[in-house]
Length: 166
Length: 166
Image: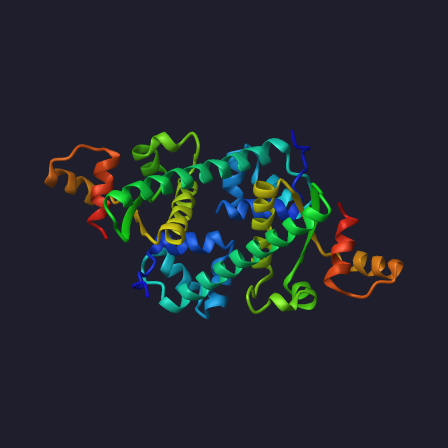
């Protein structure tokens, strides 16, 4: 076990920014108040170990998703070389909860999923030279597409729809 | 040359967040207005290629600094194994400009340097199992330390001072 070193003010601030979160969102995720979050970042009160653990766990979850997705894209790419791929993201929390609920446990906020998608885009460009476009799910357009193509709702259908938006 | 693909709204937003910047700071860096930056992120106007290039260049500069610094720390670590190191950051733009001017060309804002320092911290933990503490330069305390130790102003003196704050 590594000794626990409490993050100082600037580190708490950087941790939040690196996850792309607002003070309100950090408060929600760590079950603290926004005032407390700002106090950590101003150095007037130390960030509790539990709050740090929560945010670092989320950061790890993002990294795991990035690594796994890039591996999948690399395999896909070997079978069917492409230079441009669509990756579905979600425009708001309600849409994320409805269509992508399996991620709610590891990445509870839609903003975290978008940040993961962004890191996937960066990594795929750098490592695979594949250009990923983040396509926010447009529910109306997606429903229409499914009707036209006679498709049920699934991750695969969403991916197919997103491809039409490239 | 890769074909230029303009970033869409959500991608512009993620790019800014991944650099830890506010809309005002992006406006300043890309010589646009805050209103324009918000328009890119709302999808009401496309992000110009020049603005994208500017932000991606900064992102690259951060990555280069992270890689180079982690390499230096790895060499240092081989000579003198340590589990905990101090890394000087700067509390505001004036202090950054005065003490760290050689980075102004590649990372014009103090917030970008802090974000680079944060990524260095993360990378060193992950790859070298070295715990880096970001220590904001306290000018008064640093001056006092230099007087006591009879040291001139230099990167090395700042590093020595920061070590006393661990």
